Image (cartoon, rainbow, N blue to C red; front, side, top):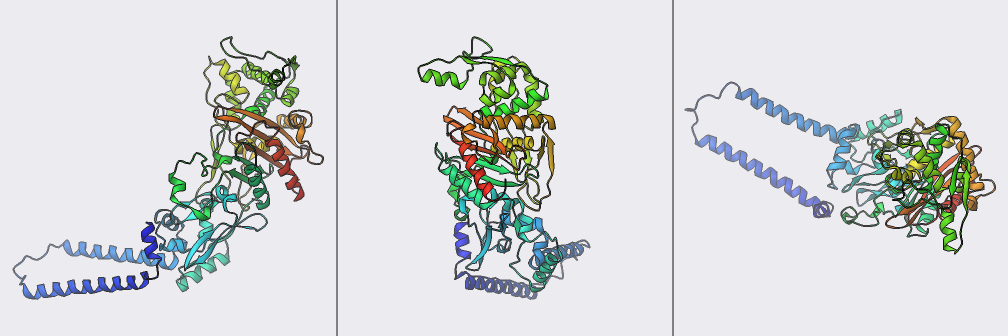
Length: 532
């Protein structure tokens, strides 16, 4: 295909194509002349007359041939009015001379009008250009004659191709293309909800983070689901797509959108889920949290709090937390408390809160007329009834439970929005849409107070900043393949939330030391733009 595309785009191809057409015409005329000579030389009168059905059948074949030519003619005149056909030609015919690839696709813009993708003419061909390169690669995606479509380039394909006629101006443009037989029709622009400056800041911060510079950030508005940042690192440059990117088994997995598809142990951020379960079930007591920890059987090692190990590393001892209520346990991020809480609630309670908070789902972003863009929620496998230790492990965000940054951001946004999760949206013209009531408004209100306390007085106190009123939960997730993953999820300002977020830094270590400061710096940047 590369060789053919190089041939078809080369300068000699024009004269060669004309020569091939002339040669085909001469050969066809020669065959007709031979047929005429044969008819003159051979007497065919002795043959039987053809059967009656042969003539109508031949006529139908001729009509079918004419219909095919007519259909091709309509493509040449007004092919952009056939969106499915255009999309099919773009996705499955990767030849660069395919007219579907000549369309001057509309621009993709951020919420301030900054260009994230546009088409430029280069040597007579429409070339797609991405000014921000890897920064928006996963979110905006790519439109390439050889590698197809992804991201917003796919979900907004109809409009970008000019196939969505929303106004009189759009119909007028189509009419102009038909009358002039334009082979380079123009598509419509699409404005996203993204903020390019915040996105670049998040990508730069992730790239510079400890642990190798891998991770994800998702920032959205709880009230309407508008996504301002969807960053994933490492990334790739959509301006320089090569086959090796898709074929090679790169351990860095640059094609993976970690924000929407990456499954990670959530660690202590999962305690927000367990706190919601406890509040929904009316829990109001205290649980004893001794220094020697908690286990469901002497055959399993005890689950302990991080203070125990800190004291042990320092050569000292620790007395334990003693009796804790839910709010204090969440602020202190007590593993012993939440392991007991999970076992106390039982397997059915964990399964029920997982179902209500939309675990084990794929959720489409709002909008998108041609191809859905979706994100995966966390995975909460069924735990056998006999496995009480597995239940305790899952209750502190370890074991077999995983989460995606997008899902945890959605849960944080629901807490900020009185328990109502709005469907995340990437396009400005996509209507805000309620997704699900994840919890009661009373549970959400109490969680907002608890999560604010977790930053003001608990594990997140190192990032408490005047004027931001951050509420959230840190997480340090044990990882069998290396250093722990660093998490921070939450919203701000706590009293009247306008932004919710999830930050993941792979192999970053403590959530309070890496992910939380990154989130704080991003919120400071957002506040400078008047978003808080």
